[in-house]
Amino acid sequence: MSLHDEIKAVLDDYIAKWNVYDIPGMKALWDSDEAEPIYVAEERDPIIGWQAMETYWGGGAKTSTHLIKYSDLMARKAADDVAHAFYRLHWNVYIPGGAYPRPIGNSVRVTSLLRKKPAGWRLFHHIEAPEASIIQLRKAHERAVDPELFEMLKKKGITF
Image (cartoon, rainbow, N blue to C red; front, side):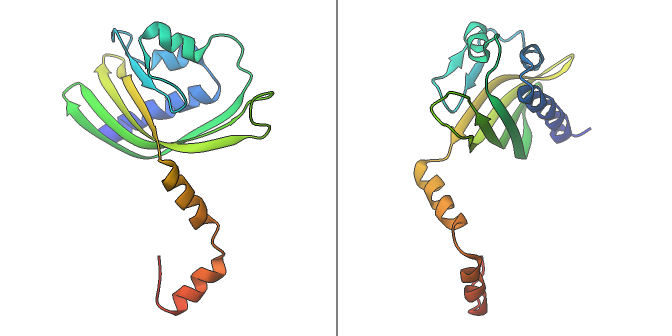
């Protein structure tokens, strides 16, 4: 199995566990030998160490409904026992009684580091990087273009 396939299998498992909020399952995919795992979620300050990770994950009943997907995985070895994964992650969430009365979502760019352990690859470092607001705004404007304009431009030999 290629490195890409091995890392994809871990991420598939991790995202599936996030989507059902299986906290023990998510934690099992992290390197338990790592003294200070680092998790930088888009929406908060860096989470460093196991206690902070467990506080972030919670442990009580989850009130939100969410769906997380990832795409465009690039995986490469950084050392014999360390892999670097870069991918896009799209999150969707509905939080009843929260600040938003309707579901919201966004895409982030993610860099994760994984360590090869006897049980397989395990996460120890995860950073989510949202696109700058100017990029998000530009993409929103591009998505709002009527398809007719693209047809008009195509007739002039202009394609995208």
